[in-house]
Length: 69
Image (cartoon, rainbow, N blue to C red):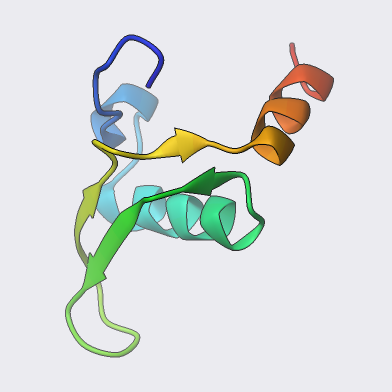
């Protein structure tokens, strides 16, 4: 996200469903904001993930800083 490119599932070798779930978890934990995960109905499969305007929050930056590999 730092270089202005929207992350995609293929960038991480995962399918759209897993990618969407991880994005939802990150948002729930307050690590990112302004994300969109659209599902096909309640509890349905991920239809699309939009991260164009997503930002990493301060807690997200702290998480990244403390979990470098």
